[in-house]
Image (cartoon, rainbow, N blue to C red; front, side, top):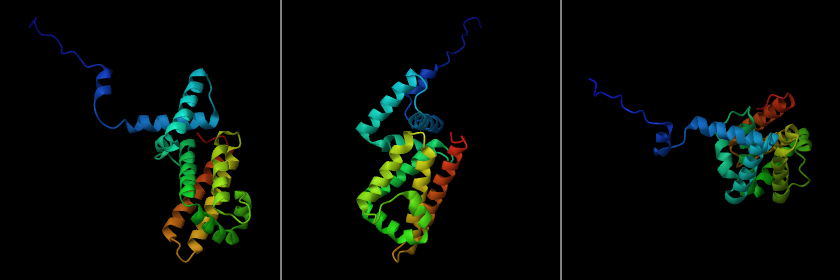
Length: 196
């Protein structure tokens, strides 16, 4: 029995080379960290370097690469709020004419949200894209709650308009209304200092 040796245990590096998808928990944590850094800014030099790399990646590959990390995040987190802003912007850019038409159809039913959303009269495709870009570009400013409220108001008016149109999709309108509620809730949490 003196020749018996315990087998060597593999080190953690062994798992680095195994094929497969990244750990979902690690992806989620990375998404939350990146979202927080983009909104709250860098706390130290290492964070500043990461923010610079993330912005470079977004410029080179598109924000979608980063936003995908936010797709499973709870609506009541920074990452979840940014995902909803990203999806809203992506839809408007892909269908600005439809977005403008649905906004126009909904504005009579929700005049307060029209004012909050800040869309110029009459809202054409370019104006709607400009609004959403303004909201999304506001995510790195201290008034994140205002940007989230504006996006929520825009989504609310569009959801109502979508439901009012003859060709409207009630299920899609309801989902968009849920997005508006989630963005509004995120704005409330941000004002209370509880959006993380």
